[in-house]
Length: 277
Image (cartoon, rainbow, N blue to C red):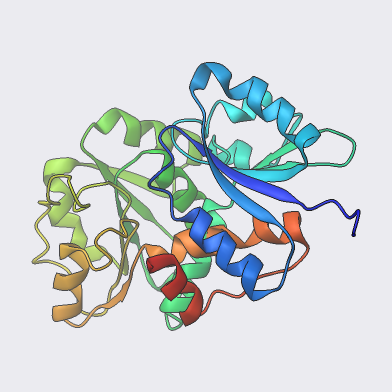
Protein backbone atom coordinates (compact mmCIF):
# COMPACT_ATOMS: atom_id res chain seq x y z
CA UNK A 1 0.00 0.00 0.00
CA UNK A 2 1.44 3.37 -1.07
CA UNK A 3 2.00 6.03 1.57
CA UNK A 4 2.28 8.82 -1.04
CA UNK A 5 0.19 11.89 -0.27
CA UNK A 6 -2.55 12.43 -2.84
CA UNK A 7 -2.68 16.14 -3.79
CA UNK A 8 -6.02 17.92 -3.46
CA UNK A 9 -7.26 21.12 -5.08
CA UNK A 10 -10.60 22.91 -5.07
CA UNK A 11 -12.71 25.73 -6.43
CA UNK A 12 -14.05 28.04 -3.72
CA UNK A 13 -17.09 30.20 -4.33
CA UNK A 14 -20.52 31.22 -3.06
CA UNK A 15 -22.36 29.78 -4.91
CA UNK A 16 -20.11 27.25 -6.62
CA UNK A 17 -22.42 24.48 -7.93
CA UNK A 18 -22.48 26.09 -11.41
CA UNK A 19 -18.69 25.96 -11.85
CA UNK A 20 -17.28 23.98 -14.78
CA UNK A 21 -13.86 23.83 -13.14
CA UNK A 22 -14.37 20.46 -11.37
CA UNK A 23 -15.27 18.55 -14.55
CA UNK A 24 -12.40 20.25 -16.41
CA UNK A 25 -9.79 19.51 -13.76
CA UNK A 26 -11.03 15.93 -13.24
CA UNK A 27 -10.77 15.37 -17.00
CA UNK A 28 -7.12 16.49 -16.94
CA UNK A 29 -6.33 14.40 -13.84
CA UNK A 30 -7.73 11.32 -15.59
CA UNK A 31 -6.14 12.16 -18.96
CA UNK A 32 -2.66 12.42 -17.43
CA UNK A 33 -3.10 9.56 -14.96
CA UNK A 34 -2.53 11.77 -11.92
CA UNK A 35 -3.58 10.58 -8.47
CA UNK A 36 -5.27 13.77 -7.32
CA UNK A 37 -8.69 15.20 -6.61
CA UNK A 38 -10.41 18.53 -7.35
CA UNK A 39 -13.60 19.44 -5.51
CA UNK A 40 -16.15 22.30 -5.41
CA UNK A 41 -16.36 24.06 -2.02
CA UNK A 42 -19.24 26.39 -1.15
CA UNK A 43 -17.74 28.79 1.41
CA UNK A 44 -19.53 31.76 2.97
CA UNK A 45 -17.60 35.02 3.21
CA UNK A 46 -17.40 34.91 7.02
CA UNK A 47 -15.71 31.48 6.92
CA UNK A 48 -13.33 32.15 4.04
CA UNK A 49 -10.10 32.90 5.92
CA UNK A 50 -10.55 30.02 8.37
CA UNK A 51 -11.22 27.59 5.53
CA UNK A 52 -8.26 28.74 3.40
CA UNK A 53 -5.84 28.68 6.35
CA UNK A 54 -6.95 25.12 7.15
CA UNK A 55 -6.66 23.72 3.63
CA UNK A 56 -2.85 23.18 3.49
CA UNK A 57 -3.09 21.08 6.67
CA UNK A 58 -5.74 18.93 4.96
CA UNK A 59 -3.53 18.05 1.99
CA UNK A 60 -4.63 20.79 -0.41
CA UNK A 61 -1.94 22.11 -2.76
CA UNK A 62 -4.05 24.97 -4.11
CA UNK A 63 -7.42 26.30 -5.13
CA UNK A 64 -9.28 28.35 -7.67
CA UNK A 65 -11.35 31.22 -6.30
CA UNK A 66 -14.51 32.53 -7.91
CA UNK A 67 -17.19 35.12 -7.17
CA UNK A 68 -17.55 36.75 -4.67
CA UNK A 69 -14.18 35.97 -3.03
CA UNK A 70 -11.65 37.05 -5.70
CA UNK A 71 -10.81 40.39 -4.07
CA UNK A 72 -10.85 39.40 -0.39
CA UNK A 73 -8.50 36.42 -0.84
CA UNK A 74 -5.73 38.89 -1.65
CA UNK A 75 -5.86 40.11 1.96
CA UNK A 76 -5.64 36.52 3.24
CA UNK A 77 -2.67 35.44 1.10
CA UNK A 78 0.90 35.84 2.38
CA UNK A 79 2.14 36.82 -1.10
CA UNK A 80 0.34 38.32 -4.10
CA UNK A 81 1.76 38.30 -7.63
CA UNK A 82 2.26 41.54 -9.54
CA UNK A 83 -0.44 40.67 -12.07
CA UNK A 84 -3.00 39.92 -9.34
CA UNK A 85 -2.12 43.26 -7.71
CA UNK A 86 -2.55 45.06 -11.04
CA UNK A 87 -5.90 43.41 -11.72
CA UNK A 88 -7.07 43.81 -8.12
CA UNK A 89 -8.30 40.24 -7.80
CA UNK A 90 -6.97 36.68 -7.50
CA UNK A 91 -8.44 33.52 -8.98
CA UNK A 92 -5.67 31.04 -8.16
CA UNK A 93 -4.10 30.11 -4.82
CA UNK A 94 -0.91 28.09 -4.39
CA UNK A 95 -0.25 26.49 -0.99
CA UNK A 96 3.50 26.16 -0.55
CA UNK A 97 5.27 23.46 1.41
CA UNK A 98 6.33 25.99 4.07
CA UNK A 99 2.66 26.76 4.74
CA UNK A 100 2.57 30.15 3.01
CA UNK A 101 -0.20 31.02 0.54
CA UNK A 102 0.42 32.76 -2.80
CA UNK A 103 -2.40 34.47 -4.72
CA UNK A 104 -2.24 34.86 -8.49
CA UNK A 105 -4.55 35.93 -11.30
CA UNK A 106 -4.57 33.88 -14.49
CA UNK A 107 -7.69 35.44 -16.08
CA UNK A 108 -5.66 37.81 -18.29
CA UNK A 109 -3.42 34.94 -19.37
CA UNK A 110 -6.51 32.86 -20.16
CA UNK A 111 -8.10 35.65 -22.18
CA UNK A 112 -5.08 36.50 -24.33
CA UNK A 113 -4.06 32.85 -24.89
CA UNK A 114 -7.60 31.98 -25.98
CA UNK A 115 -7.60 34.95 -28.35
CA UNK A 116 -4.32 33.93 -29.98
CA UNK A 117 -5.39 30.27 -30.26
CA UNK A 118 -8.86 30.92 -31.71
CA UNK A 119 -7.90 33.95 -33.85
CA UNK A 120 -4.28 33.25 -34.87
CA UNK A 121 -4.28 36.07 -37.44
CA UNK A 122 -5.24 38.73 -34.87
CA UNK A 123 -2.50 41.34 -34.56
CA UNK A 124 -2.65 43.33 -31.31
CA UNK A 125 -1.18 46.37 -33.08
CA UNK A 126 -3.79 46.33 -35.88
CA UNK A 127 -6.05 48.89 -34.19
CA UNK A 128 -8.16 49.79 -31.18
CA UNK A 129 -10.02 47.36 -28.95
CA UNK A 130 -13.55 48.33 -27.93
CA UNK A 131 -14.42 46.83 -24.55
CA UNK A 132 -17.97 46.64 -23.21
CA UNK A 133 -18.10 46.58 -19.41
CA UNK A 134 -15.76 47.68 -16.64
CA UNK A 135 -16.09 45.02 -13.93
CA UNK A 136 -13.60 42.57 -12.49
CA UNK A 137 -13.26 40.49 -15.65
CA UNK A 138 -12.63 43.67 -17.64
CA UNK A 139 -9.62 44.56 -15.49
CA UNK A 140 -7.88 41.32 -16.49
CA UNK A 141 -8.74 41.91 -20.16
CA UNK A 142 -7.41 45.49 -20.05
CA UNK A 143 -4.14 44.46 -18.38
CA UNK A 144 -3.53 41.67 -20.92
CA UNK A 145 -4.37 43.81 -23.98
CA UNK A 146 -2.11 46.65 -22.83
CA UNK A 147 0.72 44.16 -22.28
CA UNK A 148 0.10 42.66 -25.74
CA UNK A 149 0.58 46.09 -27.34
CA UNK A 150 -2.94 47.14 -28.37
CA UNK A 151 -2.56 50.88 -29.18
CA UNK A 152 -5.88 52.09 -27.74
CA UNK A 153 -8.62 50.62 -25.55
CA UNK A 154 -12.06 52.23 -25.83
CA UNK A 155 -14.13 51.37 -22.75
CA UNK A 156 -17.89 51.75 -22.34
CA UNK A 157 -19.84 50.75 -19.24
CA UNK A 158 -23.41 51.21 -18.10
CA UNK A 159 -22.14 53.20 -15.10
CA UNK A 160 -19.46 55.53 -16.42
CA UNK A 161 -17.67 55.96 -13.07
CA UNK A 162 -16.21 52.45 -13.14
CA UNK A 163 -14.82 53.02 -16.64
CA UNK A 164 -13.32 56.36 -15.58
CA UNK A 165 -11.65 54.62 -12.65
CA UNK A 166 -10.07 52.08 -15.02
CA UNK A 167 -8.65 54.94 -17.08
CA UNK A 168 -7.19 56.55 -13.95
CA UNK A 169 -5.52 53.28 -12.96
CA UNK A 170 -4.36 52.00 -16.37
CA UNK A 171 -3.53 55.26 -18.12
CA UNK A 172 -3.83 57.29 -21.29
CA UNK A 173 -4.17 54.37 -23.74
CA UNK A 174 -7.73 54.00 -22.39
CA UNK A 175 -10.56 56.17 -23.73
CA UNK A 176 -13.96 56.18 -22.05
CA UNK A 177 -17.22 56.70 -23.93
CA UNK A 178 -20.78 56.85 -22.59
CA UNK A 179 -22.80 53.62 -22.78
CA UNK A 180 -25.35 55.28 -25.10
CA UNK A 181 -22.46 56.13 -27.47
CA UNK A 182 -20.95 52.61 -27.52
CA UNK A 183 -22.55 51.78 -30.88
CA UNK A 184 -20.84 54.81 -32.43
CA UNK A 185 -17.30 53.62 -31.62
CA UNK A 186 -17.74 49.98 -32.62
CA UNK A 187 -16.76 50.83 -36.21
CA UNK A 188 -13.27 51.72 -34.86
CA UNK A 189 -12.80 48.26 -33.36
CA UNK A 190 -10.14 45.92 -34.68
CA UNK A 191 -11.15 43.86 -31.64
CA UNK A 192 -14.53 43.93 -29.87
CA UNK A 193 -14.77 42.38 -26.40
CA UNK A 194 -17.92 41.90 -24.32
CA UNK A 195 -16.92 41.57 -20.67
CA UNK A 196 -20.46 42.13 -19.32
CA UNK A 197 -22.95 39.38 -18.43
CA UNK A 198 -25.42 40.81 -20.98
CA UNK A 199 -26.45 38.08 -23.42
CA UNK A 200 -25.89 35.32 -20.87
CA UNK A 201 -28.63 32.78 -20.15
CA UNK A 202 -31.04 34.42 -17.69
CA UNK A 203 -29.61 37.93 -18.19
CA UNK A 204 -30.86 40.83 -20.35
CA UNK A 205 -29.79 41.03 -23.99
CA UNK A 206 -26.80 43.08 -25.09
CA UNK A 207 -28.56 45.99 -26.83
CA UNK A 208 -25.56 47.94 -28.14
CA UNK A 209 -26.06 48.75 -31.87
CA UNK A 210 -23.68 46.63 -33.93
CA UNK A 211 -24.33 47.96 -37.44
CA UNK A 212 -20.96 49.79 -37.46
CA UNK A 213 -18.98 46.57 -36.84
CA UNK A 214 -16.38 45.92 -39.56
CA UNK A 215 -16.14 42.42 -41.05
CA UNK A 216 -12.36 42.58 -40.50
CA UNK A 217 -12.80 42.77 -36.70
CA UNK A 218 -12.20 39.97 -34.24
CA UNK A 219 -15.12 39.65 -31.81
CA UNK A 220 -14.98 37.82 -28.49
CA UNK A 221 -17.51 37.37 -25.70
CA UNK A 222 -16.56 36.31 -22.18
CA UNK A 223 -20.03 34.78 -21.80
CA UNK A 224 -19.99 31.03 -22.55
CA UNK A 225 -23.60 30.14 -21.73
CA UNK A 226 -24.77 30.13 -24.48
CA UNK A 227 -21.54 29.23 -26.23
CA UNK A 228 -22.49 31.31 -29.26
CA UNK A 229 -24.15 34.49 -27.96
CA UNK A 230 -26.28 36.81 -30.11
CA UNK A 231 -23.21 39.06 -30.40
CA UNK A 232 -21.09 36.22 -31.78
CA UNK A 233 -23.89 35.03 -34.08
CA UNK A 234 -24.21 38.49 -35.63
CA UNK A 235 -20.45 38.93 -35.93
CA UNK A 236 -20.07 35.55 -37.62
CA UNK A 237 -22.88 36.37 -40.09
CA UNK A 238 -21.09 39.51 -41.31
CA UNK A 239 -17.75 37.71 -41.67
CA UNK A 240 -15.90 38.55 -38.43
CA UNK A 241 -13.55 36.10 -36.74
CA UNK A 242 -15.31 35.07 -33.51
CA UNK A 243 -13.87 33.74 -30.26
CA UNK A 244 -16.19 32.25 -27.64
CA UNK A 245 -15.73 32.60 -23.88
CA UNK A 246 -15.20 28.93 -23.04
CA UNK A 247 -11.58 29.02 -24.19
CA UNK A 248 -10.72 31.73 -21.64
CA UNK A 249 -12.13 29.51 -18.87
CA UNK A 250 -10.03 26.57 -20.08
CA UNK A 251 -6.77 28.48 -20.57
CA UNK A 252 -6.96 30.33 -17.23
CA UNK A 253 -7.03 26.91 -15.54
CA UNK A 254 -3.74 25.75 -17.09
CA UNK A 255 -1.18 27.57 -14.85
CA UNK A 256 -2.90 26.47 -11.63
CA UNK A 257 -3.12 22.83 -12.68
CA UNK A 258 0.56 22.86 -13.62
CA UNK A 259 1.60 24.37 -10.28
CA UNK A 260 -0.55 22.00 -8.22
CA UNK A 261 -0.10 18.70 -10.06
CA UNK A 262 3.22 19.11 -11.92
CA UNK A 263 1.83 18.62 -15.42
CA UNK A 264 1.07 21.35 -17.98
CA UNK A 265 -2.25 20.35 -19.58
CA UNK A 266 -3.18 20.90 -23.22
CA UNK A 267 -6.30 22.82 -24.21
CA UNK A 268 -7.62 20.94 -27.24
CA UNK A 269 -10.93 19.77 -28.71
CA UNK A 270 -11.18 16.94 -26.19
CA UNK A 271 -10.73 19.43 -23.33
CA UNK A 272 -13.52 21.63 -24.71
CA UNK A 273 -15.79 18.60 -25.08
CA UNK A 274 -15.09 17.56 -21.48
CA UNK A 275 -15.93 21.04 -20.17
CA UNK A 276 -19.21 21.08 -22.13
CA UNK A 277 -20.44 17.69 -20.88
